[in-house]
Length: 498
Ligand code: SF4
Image (cartoon, rainbow, N blue to C red):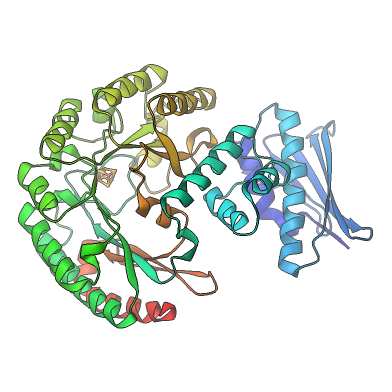
């Protein structure tokens, strides 16, 4: 049997994208092999199957546009006896491995994530962990996926810690978590693609939105009572949930406690208070009264010029002041987010951010790398922003890894994004005992998440592991008109898991 280029066009495209900004398909003959142009490079790929027990061999030849040979790699792997789907995956991995090695040789660039181009490498590890001991999983990551030793260690450390923090992580199908989306912010940041609307704007009234949210909470509570499912975590995100008034937050907590069974025993309750300019004494007091375990205050950077460029509309001084205020009022589990690679930022700015973070010592620190998402204002005006080069981003990532390790933080969840600078990842670090349970179950898709409010996406994980997504409307004006209909549709879908 011979298979080739066309069967795995997607795989080839994504691996090429690891090396080149632009990848365009050139004309190619139909059939068993084909050509793609990545920069000035032509790629010929071919798969053949042979032998008993069966094996698959991938051949990848790279040549320059003038016909000169650039690199040639061959990879042979056994073909599993299971389903056709498993065999297809093995063909894909074999071809990916040959292509990756050829491109690494030609460009001199090493790809620490090997052939893993998806956004959730931890999910892959979890699936392995359910079948094999960790040392076998590590070997598979090295041999089959060509991960660097550094990334193998990162993934396996996280996998082990997650199981320690949530011992029933692989058996959470009789519980759900709730995500509550409040779609307002004081202003919109330039890099943002979240459902976040200027709270002073005209995109549907806040009161009408809250009315819809109260309704959704009550109906979801009725459904949860009937289903008998338990509650693992509740997470308020958005937008910035603390953009609404203290009294409005208080009323939402009251409805949550009156409607949702198990609210008083929930394992973790988080409220994102990302923008320091939204934090006030009365909102902190409301959160304390309702026993919020964890909040997030997000500096993103401690360089004022950067905050101005990205439209955060708050000062560095305000971040520090609000952090200290939260501490003073008894918030003892605070997360902070930093973003690497913001415009005009390099090692020096990161050093400043880490020095400031050291003074505050939040219980957890999430380190993102800037990603150019299609819908953000920053991407639409990409030419106007100076961002760090790949090597510098890698150095910055290394600095945060070393800094967090030397300050007692452990990595406990991670994910990757498309178009992320330097093909890096986002990593959540926490001091021991302060790992966010919601981040683990949500990011690794270990249980059903019911999304309430604007832009909230419910992820319904069926008994067979298949995931169905149900997005609520992003825009408050649409949500305000249709929340009843959306709520009922979603509850019908959720009936799958009862
Ligand atoms: S604070 Fe967060 S959600 Fe709000 S606009 Fe900025 S990035 Fe988006």
